[in-house]
Amino acid sequence: MGNARITMRDVAQAVGMSPMTVSRALRDDNTVSAQTRARVRQVAQELGYVYDSTAQAFRTQKSGFVAVTLPSVNNANFAETFRALSNGLGQAGVQLLLGSTNYRVDKEEELARQLLTRNPEALILTGGHHTDATRQLIRGRGLPVIEMWDLPADPLGHVVGFSNADAMGHIVDHLVQTGRRKLAFVGASEGADMRGVVRRSGAVDRARHHGLPEIDFIDAGPAPVSMRHGHAAIEAFGRDIARYDALVCVSDPVAFGCLSALQRLGLTVPDDLAVTGFGHFEVAKISNPRITTVNVRAEDIGHQVVALLQDIFAGAVADQRSVDVGSELVIGETS
Image 1 (tube, one colour):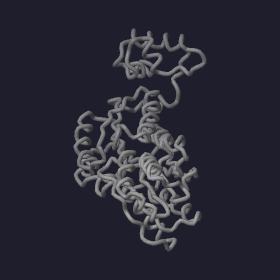
Image 2: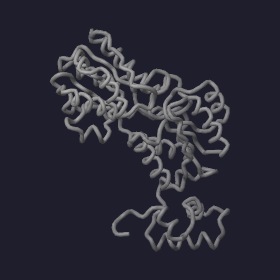
Image 3: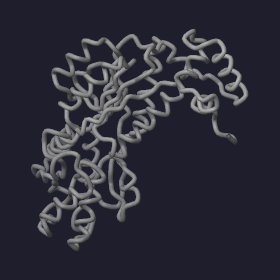
């Protein structure tokens, strides 16, 4: 395996067992036979695997599962967070149960009921907007709950996220500094993508703070909105879109779609109008011109959730904990 770090998954593959069984064997769990425990320890020693502190921190787990809901499995940012969760928990032999809500709180409620039947050791929810039934269901279970990707005012439990409103405020501040005054927000129809709604609200509030005219709303369609939605929304406007100084987009993919439509219309970015995104997606880094955006540290959210779970399962968290990973303006070439 060269100089690569040996993981529990490597040991599991070598002995032909699941990571969960290997984890139990290495901590002398009596549910695993003595013969199996000896075999696993031998192979772990031969491979040079060290049962690290992360795995030790999860000794109190029972089912070996943590449940997580994501709005979409196609969104690159959520995928980045999930990858960090999967890698971090996998090192400890903990498996993830994943459910996709498609940005619908009623779907989240349905998934929460299904996931809780599996007796997970913790529940990780994306965002802080839930139905009353979901809140009642979760609070009645008494298991650790982490809400990520947001800083809800009334959290169900622990929180790891950032302020979507403040992050969008970075964009508006920047546009004001570059002389833009007439802004339009391009996003999904209200009622589905609640983080998008908060971003729009944050942009509107920040514009008012600067004394700008009211931000117009360009409806790109029902969530989740993507490149083609952004492209279609601007294409429908035609060259009249140049009435605005800047398009403030709910995400980088939407911004890329808008940028492509503007180029097809013969408009120059940022000379005719600016375009900004959100999320620091890969497309923002490679587009021509590169898109001004906000880095919301998607991978770090996953790492921080794993660290928090490590402390929770080790009994080191007595009170509700809130971790703000913050956000950072990334100035590209579209503003």
